[in-house]
Image (cartoon, rainbow over all chains, first blue to last red; front, side, top):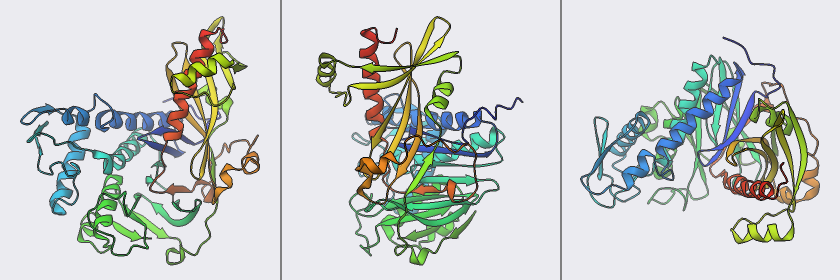
Length: 246
Length: 180
């Protein structure tokens, strides 16, 4: 394999993707690995964003009751995780956003709409999944260590302790939070923007962060923690995750 | 997975600090977007009043009358153009480059730098000026330099709006013959 290092590129690159800024960092590896990581995320976006008319999600949302469509591997993986989380939270985790948590069903590689008006939005889980796919792409491109940060849903891999800072959503600036090794951290927010019908038990705490081995679970479990306000929630341990309110 | 917390119990008491990352400079972005180019020519795209009005009528206010562009050439062929712009969010200043091919379509968008302030000085010209001419870090240092932000509301809407604006500006300049 030819090395393309030394062409003056920084080891960090960033692009607008997934509705946010996505940074890809490579400690050791080929420069074209960045491209592979961005491509992997663009592919997930094209299949799972409800704003892309040709995506599996947009096509499902346009279906009528009792219709179905064949979906790709990305949709199958994220929908399986979403169903598991819905079952484990008594439907509090709901990708239908109230339009019908049991209004969709996957059979084989087909996604069925069970009643009219059901729409899904994978925004609460797909970003983390896309980060995981980007990390896979970096590893496949022979990167020994690096990280991917999609607007705060981030994962590090390999021999690196990644300093993680938290953004102050009210006053600006950042604060040191943790060092992350071989895992993922995601941060979400309580309050009106949280997908929760339950009030925060401790209103002064505005943010939740979750660390988990995979970014999909870190991303999704921030929603579970936002809903429950419980850092000892059994789902966190079940997915080998840790949560913080701050 | 290993997570080592940095004085978390006191995190609310730790003063917030500014944050900045340089990814690449405009020349590096241009070479990355047009690797086949054998030369880049700097050119100002200047819109006249009628062109500004036409853009505003399309719902894309041009915001600035003059845009700095690098035109990518290979021999006698024009491959495309790279325009650098910056946008200001609530607390962040983002400099980015847009590469547009000769067909007028966006080829690539790269973030050149990201700066986050710990206050509203992000809107002050003096605060922003301190970064002008700063060269990007080309080597990676494992340490605080590579800190990553985890936050809930970082949106790229300003950037996507900016990209749209640049596409229109370049289109107007092209039709006026300013890109040769």
